[in-house]
Length: 143
Ligand code: HEM
Image (tube, rainbow, N blue to C red; front, side, top):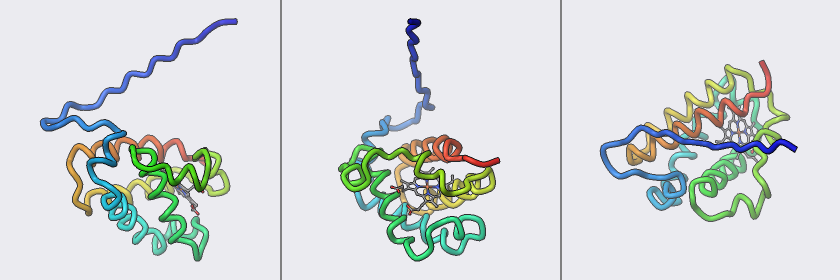
């Protein structure tokens, strides 16, 4: 059987100050940083004409907690998300929600606003935006 070797090389622009790796983001901004970021994001979601209707109404607080815990786990913090929800399988979990280009772009727009609104180190902002851009694209499941 053919064996396939996949090598992933990540390029990230060299920033003037310290280099922060994904798994160090939690150490850099702590629980509080993620709390402020995701609160700033979810403050905008219920009233949004595209995203608001997509989310289970009446459980925005739960959705906020799930996204916050997921990001904390993904960026080097405690694994509460895994303990509570199991393997992330994000694409599968998004399958019930129609995520088209417009929804993806709006999600990104609101998240970028949140990232810029809360005070975070520049390196952390860059890592998060890069991660959100690609993950949001991966969540698309409709034309
Ligand atoms: C691109 C546009 C996106 C839309 C429209 C969208 C929409 C949704 C909706 C409607 C839910 C269900 C709310 C709930 O948890 O009860 C959800 C859950 C979730 N989303 Fe997204 N999402 C998007 C992108 C993303 C991205 C980029 C991430 C990660 C960075 C993400 C992470 C999550 C997580 C962790 C959950 C909870 C999954 C679970 O444990 O059940 N989503 N999303």
